[in-house]
Length: 107
Length: 126
Image 1 (cartoon, rainbow over the protein chains, first blue to last red):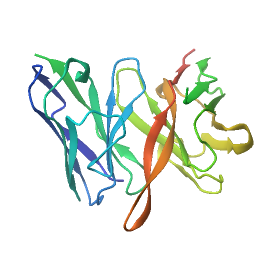
Image 2 (cartoon, rainbow over the protein chains, first blue to last red):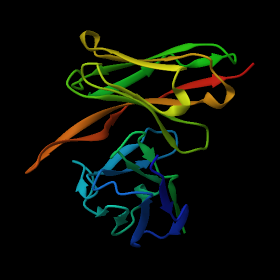
Image 3 (cartoon, rainbow over the protein chains, first blue to last red):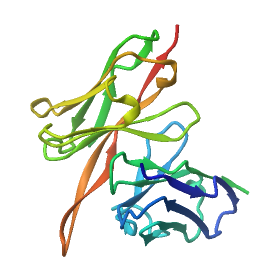
């Protein structure tokens, strides 16, 4: 199975700050990587697919990069509605595997 | 409004069974692969199973093989998950989620989880 390791597991940031979350795959997943946002009590929401493609309707302050084993989700200017938990997901092979999540909290 | 809606969760004793349903409305269902994902209280997301658009190809996470069964009925725009031999560690919110596709110069590519249901809570306890 492909292991997905996210870092950090949590972070505190202020509104307007630039935030970067990293996801590392235990083997090459090409660009078969998505990023999801989840708010408490809600279903996850897809932000990024194919490592760097922005899901329709998602603000452009979100961006994704990387391929192979190293991936990054960047929020260019953190907004109040962005405080949530973020997950990466690889779908290059089964079983599909998520990272353990990164909780973004208000500083 | 386009949505997926799960139902069928509840309280069940260890060793018991439940059947979860996911109904699609306003969301194109039959051409797309479908999935079940769960989340234990306070924990992360865990993929459980996927089923192809026709139902002919199915994948399971190892830890649910032989206990959970995914199926679909395209005529009813519905996805199902049969949960058998339930354990306390199966306590979680269960989500259905649809795969989608994008097209580039190298053809069509499947990408997971563009639409999610709101989840249904399964509690396994005596």
